[in-house]
Amino acid sequence: MYDYDMIVIGSGPSGRRAAVQAAKIGRSVLVVERGRRVGGVSVHTGTIPSKTLRETVLNLSGWRERGFYGRSYRVKQDIGAGDLMARLHKTLDHEVEVLEHQFARNGVKTARGEARFLDPHTVEITEENGDVDTYTGEHVLIAVGTRPFRPDYVPFNGRTVFDSDEIVDLPKLPRSLTVIGAGVIGVEYASIFSALDVAVTLIEPRNSFLDFIDKELIEEFVHELRDRNVGLRFGAAVTAIELGAEERPVCRLADGRSVQSDMLLFAAGRVGATDRLNLPAAGLAVDHRGRIGVDPKTLQTAVPHIYAAGDVIGFPSLASTSMEQGRVAACHAFGLQPPPPPEFFPYGIYSVPEMSTVGMSEEEVRRREIPYECGIARFRETSRGHIMGLSNGMMKMIFSVKTRRLLGVHIVGEGATELIHIGQAVLNLKGTIDYFIENTFNYPTLAEAYKIAGLDAWNRMTRA
Image 1: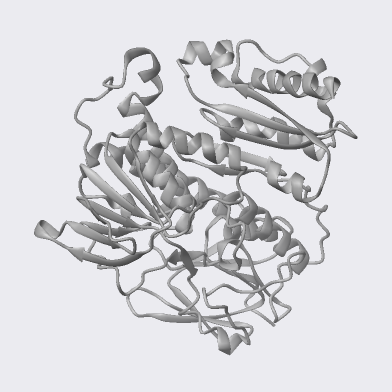
Image 2: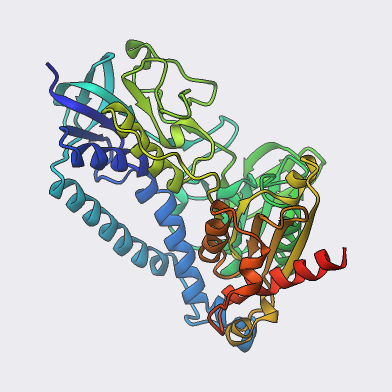
């Protein structure tokens, strides 16, 4: 009756995971990707490029060794945009090859072009050369992701004023950079360029940022940024952006100040890439940010056989959770019942230094009126930290005084996004402070911070 059991629009984390899951249970799948290569925003302009750029910067700048050799130490003295792009292109090529092979060995068909609905079961695909094909699907998954929000008052030109997708194709390294928007993307890029000794100013109209992160962690992170002379302009909205001599952007702030720099990155939000899907023909609507509403358990939209997953449905907009959403959508579409998701999943912010968190923050514990105690470990207290030359970085653990259970883990510093998974496992297994006190950790490692923080909290709890 239909050409395919499932048509997946978009080949990012949620789309590819859904396609492979459906194929593995013997269903016919077509993945539609409008880009030149599969992978979606995550592979080509988002997750993988930004993290590759970060790793390249830390390696070439000698950032990790400056604790021993001084702030002027560099592995490569004159770092240019070409040095950053070389590693990026190699990484992207490898990611695409792996994904194409994964589709091929699972029998997933792909079509390149822009998709739009003709009716709830029919999708029209317009190729780059103008050819048009039409396919029908019993089920459809919308996994188109997001694109940068581009307001009219920002003079984007691709040379000195960029959005967060364009910044990965930077033509040259600036001496100074203004970043508008202190969300995850803005904070990551601001700190990455700061590690290259670029003079960075971060502008945010609100008085706070990254509000889902434990406040003590944010205080530590802000101290690190200020120590590197990153300019923080919080609580002042941008009223105008002008281009001066040689197209140098000038930001006018509501408090009367101005910020001038060689380049500007506008990273204040993203919108769902749904405007060209002709969703009304499928019986669907979007919110003011172009996002599609779904049932959080099944990922079904208002039209039951049409699913949506990934960034296009909004929070938490993580590649890790998007993958799981795609798998859940495919399972539900074909009558499988995946096990319920774990209660806690980690957040990772790949800034310099990186941050990661899982479970409840101290503010949330207080709101719930749970008697608690905290334990702190500084990376400089660990032997591994001494070996690595770390002067910054900390781990914060929160425990229930009544049940002794772990409530949350919050880390800022080298390896935070890797270390967090120990805390994630203990949280989901409902473990207590005793695990960290009684167990032996490899020595010397940064993971030893779990024992230090556990003992710190235990000392306070026993005194109490």
